Image (cartoon, rainbow, N blue to C red; front, top):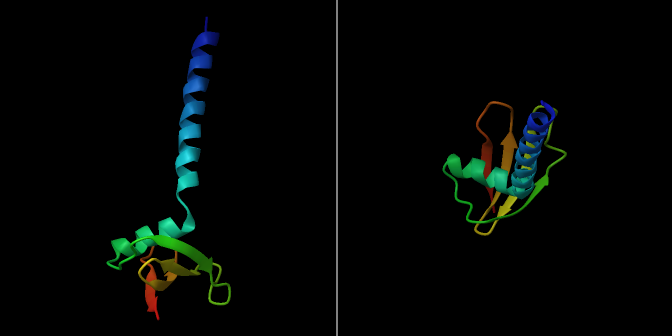
Length: 89
């Protein structure tokens, strides 16, 4: 009696996980960084790439060089804080 209900719950859970994984696969580091700096008022029309700056990064502070179609930025990220954004020439 309970088997069909259990299978239905399992199937609905699995479909939700699959949709979540597909959405996560579409969000890349460049698109997430671009969204973050846009919220802070910087222009990034199309995110092209993001490269982690290993020399400037620390355990709780990642630094990325974000290349957009219209500009390049150095983006420093710390947990629960706004990003430090510097426009590069």
